[in-house]
Length: 97
Image 1 (cartoon, helix red, strand yellow):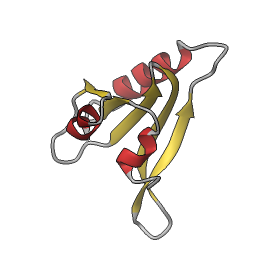
Image 2 (cartoon, rainbow, N blue to C red; image 1 turned 135 degrees about the vertical axis):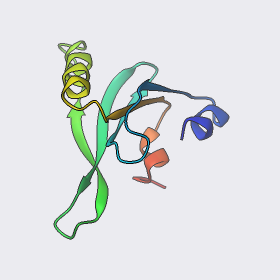
Image 3 (cartoon, one colour; image 1 turned 30 degrees about the vertical axis):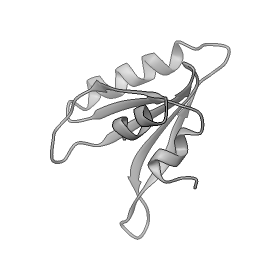
């Protein structure tokens, strides 16, 4: 994902490394550092894992999303957090064409 984003002029980085084989992945999508959206792969009622919007940036408190990510990371040491900064980042996790 990070390489694909970089190839299209965006920026990607790993904010937290988790368990290599079994850690949950959170993807933070931003556009020029703003408009943050956090997606994670969650099991649905059929047991399939799909990307689900977990958190939106509060325009009145932009620090809130960082604090939320810090809490999630502290609660789950196996958690991976990846940030992708590119327009229409949802396409990199298969949510748009």
